Length: 250
Length: 327
Image 1 (cartoon, chains in turn orange, green):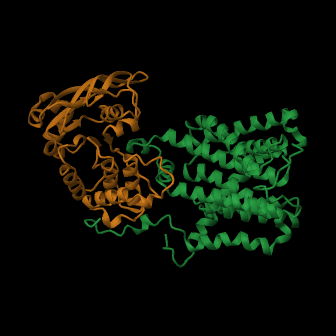
Image 2 (spheres, chains in turn orange, green):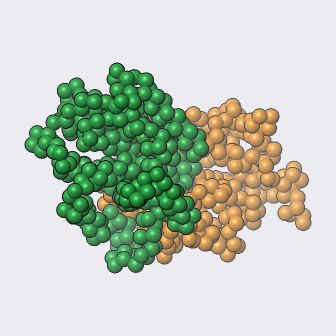
């Protein structure tokens, strides 16, 4: 399989602090790839560099073979690289259907269309409604986002990303703050995504990571420590020392 | 879509005209007959409403705060005035000129408001308006400075309806322009473009992550807002046949923000109703107490901001109106 997303010697420095240190990463098409590491290891920084939220101090990002290092966020989204956020980034005053329709409209290139009302763009609305159906969100379609429980808001966070039809989906702790039973449902939803969608996952829950991922990269202090299949990572002594120690021994 | 069992009507028909809107637009027609002796006030209200609509487009929808929106109103007013003074007296042509001139200025200055926080934007917009005010003050050959621009001669509307002493033409003309501009704005805010503006206001950080070019959208709506303000300024010039320096004044910008907050942001009708209430209150309160009427205005503003944050429209929205679902 070929790499769909790749970084070469990617670095990011904030003043004297190196948040990302020469990371060369290769994500294969269709992979379920987890990024793990202790707090402050630079996982979210890496996501921010991949998506263009931050400009790297050095190094390059390649998406499907093209150098996208200097493309803006929205341009990378148009090329199929879509993320979710660790802290919900939703449209609080819109209904769930409206906000997903917004995302669908942007993907369909309707964002500049100003003459016909949203309601007349039936294809976009139908697609949004179908997506809500697959995510079991139909019952709240006409509810204002802000009035929903946190677990369901977390689902909308993912729905907005899926509406952009990602080829590579970066999930930054999708289940953070979600009660256990709901997080199981959330991961079941993620697991059901077709293999055409490559998934890069940041997650702290090791049970989930080892069940879900077919490859794991371990970041420590902004640098890539090692990467391998879950079975090997679980036995890696260095990984256990820096990160898994308490989780596995304790 | 047969596979999805969901009533899509609330979104599909969100842009349909509500009966209350038809009723609303009957008011200015009835007002013509009820307050026929006060047509100049009614024209002023229509112009203020158009100006306020322009701020609602950029603030209420796109979330760009401005304390200098009079810059574009003033540019439009001078553009229409100078066009008419130097022989281009056709009113619609004058409005087109006012819109184009203000839009050009809006486009250029939009790049200054793209970055930065609300406070930065307040200061930048304030600064731009101050510079324009002093420039107009200084360029007396061009603008007449503090004496105002004289000699504005406006031809009949469509070559048929001359501006009369009673202000009948001025009123119907202002109202017609307001309605057409409102109708266009209403289309815009209900479109996918309008939805993306609401997205920007509600969460500017998420928009690029769903593929929306935020800066491009902001440049366009700021330019459109400036054009709207320019048309309002042009209307004032044409209906009064005069341009005074205070079209660019700080108090005009500040008052505008106040009117919009009073009426309610992000609903278009808030801008219209706010203007009606403000101008009427101004008229009656300053009749009763010419010196201190702003006291009551200040009091009303404090009460609105503290207890009814969505303004008059927010309060109206809480009334049980047939045909509207409680929100």
